[in-house]
Image (tube, rainbow, N blue to C red; front, side, top):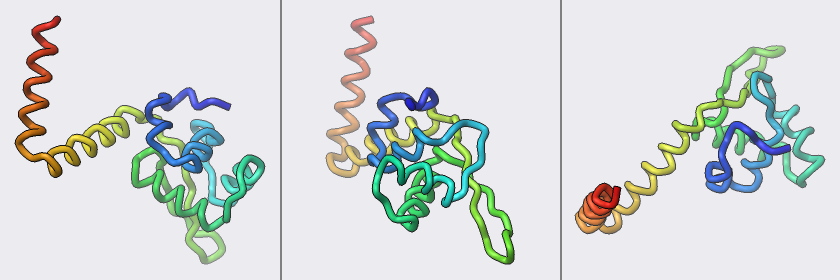
Length: 123
């Protein structure tokens, strides 16, 4: 099942396991770790604890939302696919640009400025 929500570029930026999780999730449906694990184990070998970690990473990246519920005196997370791919794509670009600036400083900034000027002249 292909994800119609996220572009190929976004999926390429994820780990193979993160991509598998995103692909098995359907919009407007809640999932707990156990449910995701049962869907994924059919496709890939993975530990249940790894699924929790991967879901947390996807939450931090803004690709899933998370609600906290009390279930029999324990905390249970419910995850839902977040359809805001633009925000995630922006995070990826922002992270890459910041990495270039940290590594190359003003040289990177000057390159970006020159590149943008050249592109606007071509249009």
